[in-house]
Structure formats: C-alpha cells, structure tokens
Image (cartoon, rainbow over all chains, first blue to last red; front, side, top):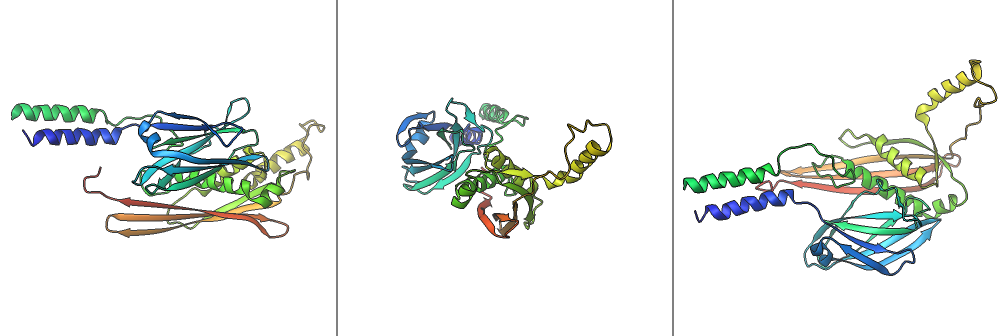
Length: 132
Length: 197
C-alpha cells in the first residue's frame, strides 16, 4: 500500500505532464517604439523567467524591422517559442496565418536577440508572443 | 489489497481516457516534433528566415525601392536522403515575397498552358480581338531563384542527429551575378529516454 500510492501519484503526474496545454505570455510595443507599453501574461511562471531587455525598430526600405533582446532570468536552460504579430494602422493583423512559432533555446541567465521583418509595408505595429 | 488494486486500475483508466486517441484540428504554425524527418516547422522556419533576410539586405532594399523586379523560381536541388517537396518551400517563399509587395514572379511551370490559351485567344476566332491578350507582351524575368538542400545524418545507438542546410540564391540573369544568398541551418536530435516520457 505504501509503495502503491506514490506509484499512482507518479503515474498520474506523468500522464498529466504529457497532456498539459501550452500557456502564453504577450509583450507589446506601440508604433512610437522604444518603450514597452504593455506586458500581458497568462503564464506567470514563464513571465517571471523571460524578460524583454531591449526593443529596437527601424524601417528598411518601407518595411518595419524589429529586434528584441530577450533575457532568461532563470538559472537553467529555457526552451521556448516566440512569434511576431503585425498590425496595420487600423489594428488589422497582417498575414495572421503566415507567422510561424520560432524555437529558441537559451542558456541560464543569458540574453538572446530575435529579429523579424514585417510581412508587408502596411504593418506599423507589432506584438511578440511567447509560449513554452 | 484488492481494493487498492481496483482503485489503481480505475485511476489509470481515468488518466488514460484523458489522452485517448482522437482526431482534432491543430495550430498549423505550432512546433511539430513527431520525428527528426523534415517537417512543417522546418519548412516555416526556412521560409521565414530566407524572406526576412532578403528583405533587409541593403542592395535588395535599394533594388526594390522604386520597382518590383521579376523573378522566376528554378528549383531547389534536394541532396538530402529524404524525399522533400522542395517546391513547397519555394512556394511559401514566393508567396511571402509577392505579399511583401517587393517582387513579382513568372511561373515557368504553366508556360505551355498559357501558350495554349494565347493561341486560343488569337487563332480560334471565338475571342473578341479587342479583348484578346496579345502575343509577345510578357515580361522577361530579371532574376532567378535557386538553391540546394542538404543534410548530414548521424546515428549512435539510440541517438540520431540530423543537420539540415538550406541555401537559397538570387541570380541576376543578365549579368550572371549572384545578388543575394543565404542559408538556414537546422539541427534536430532524437534520443530515446528510458521511460519514453
């Protein structure tokens, strides 16, 4: 009996871990650039581990070019995905199905820059979404 | 003991029913790691990287500032050991480039059918000549897009390591100069753990 109970707990934990849903955090920047205006998070654990250290934007030709410096505040390696969402001046998302989740593996307490180019010239605002 | 065993069985059944096999729609952009073979995530990563890089390369920015160069897609040589539909990769890249408003493309795979249609419009006598598309008015491609896709696969016991390298080039047809090139590397490793979790 004493052996069975922890085994049952272990079994259940393993099953649940295999089926757990991914959570999502969101960091947003307005078109005036530089300043982080909002940080939304539905995953407080992930939000406590990833922070945005720096955000830069410039226009290449007429396309918005973004660089975000992400920092892993955790002391262990962190494996997560990010994607950019682009919006025009009216708030319509540009190419919503064309932006894949990109994988990043970051060593403990390290920084990593991620870059992206707007899919077309009408994109003036962007968001970075992060999930595990 | 019997009661404990039955409870264990019930608990397992409940936990397993949560993961029962079923068909569902998923996020087409989500990370796919079924095995180390070339997959949708690889395709999306390659296309995104290539397009992003091409769009910010200064000579390309300058070239597309006031005009939209015409490109034709040759082919991507598949040098990997897998069957990979490389046309699907170039289709994605082509779509992104057209939607960026920076490039235009001609499609060499439909030349015969276009010619048939032109012949029909000019020779059949059924089409109003004022609306018929004129012969010899197509725009010649200025650039050619082509590339290579290769892989290195290594195995040791239960560990498998796959390295992919996708190279894309943009060549000026008139001058023969490669105006832009870039590559995307992908590494995937599969290692079997003891409990399969």
